[in-house]
Length: 365
Image 1 (cartoon, rainbow, N blue to C red):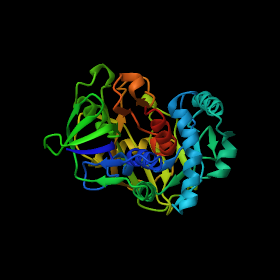
Image 2 (image 1 turned 45 degrees about the vertical axis):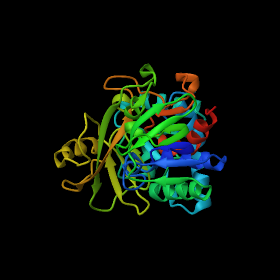
Image 3 (image 1 turned 90 degrees about the vertical axis):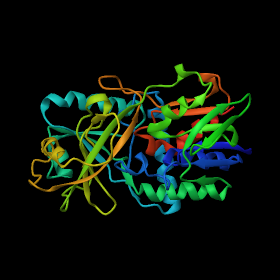
Image 4 (image 1 turned 45 degrees about the horizontal axis):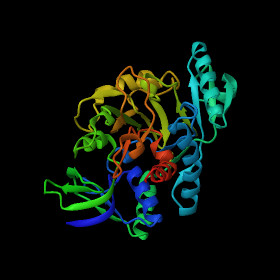
């Protein structure tokens, strides 16, 4: 039986950030990742946006960790030479009937301590002439980054402090002991013992928690899979900022326009509740994209959209339910001292990752 102090399951951006934080505090840390390399799930299938913290209920973990994590992330990227840009974004009210909702988002943002500015139509169009709207909310703190380079830097930091990453290592069995947890990998009998398991498995986190023999099931939420597809623009985009519609179902931010660091535009994600499946993008979904995008960019040419990529959100609230907050469940919640579960770490998880890692490690007894 091999012993290790802490096992982190999942080498997405959250698992890597948590491992980095643990290793920096002198904890012997092993990261187990089922895939062939790190960051292949939601961490590489998103909009690569640094969120300002506009939408999240004041006092929630999402609000607090997004705001704190945003500033930490900008500083981290600056210090490490990671590609990023504080480009700003406009949240648009497509018609006069949506302006009141825009004002409500502004109030929430200000309650979270986030700088925003309400713009009348003429002021918004002076910033982005190809836009159409009744009004817009300007968020100057929103940005973009190279998510892969960021994860590389997190892993480098963790490994420099002694952490180890083992890919192609799927956790298939977990057995609680009095003061430890035994871990079986790739179908083998549990041959690894850890004093602490940190569950950062993303959309697989609830399923992983259910594999823990003896763990109280009432503390494991149901997982809902929300697939989001992206389409790319096959020509130059006439925008300098990110463009977002008002949020839609279950707090999903809608089919928005984002830019990469080379200035190329992509649109998405949409929302498709699924039971499983793959990451393929159905070209037929483009019709919904054209309709949604033309509400704020009527000049989008026919045939300009090309299928891009898709991702799946780690949701713990289903269709028609209010958006759930992040859950960082340690022994104070479920009574098991050797398990820390991170559930529902969807957007703004990338932005919040450094602050979230500090919060999670602080909850370890």
